[in-house]
Image (cartoon, rainbow, N blue to C red):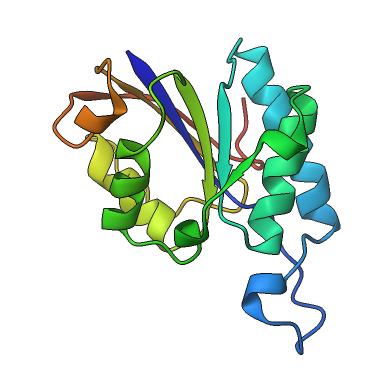
Length: 164
């Protein structure tokens, strides 16, 4: 069995209107929420084998903040340009290409694609994965290449404003 954790980047800043979308940084709330959400995963006893992220500034920083909480080396984060503005088919292709040595993957990306992808995985429907929202799914496979056809089970959904 493999596990996939999909994470939308934390809240970004719209302060500087001259900044290109790709280069928008996290705002203060985003810088607070990302480590908090990582701590929630740690409380669940989750161990992440690989952090894979869009290289856009806000996703990259979110992945780095999660990685730091997991005491992982931020230099080990895998950045894939195709995860920026990714569609469902791109998410599937990326997941299918993951090294089988990794059992639990944290994948950081953007809306609307991440919400659309989440909604293809299980019977659970999410209207919108909010910023720093985390969706976990268990995938009944030994090889990531079998991802698309595999049986998937909803594991959890969490986001910063969710109450216990």
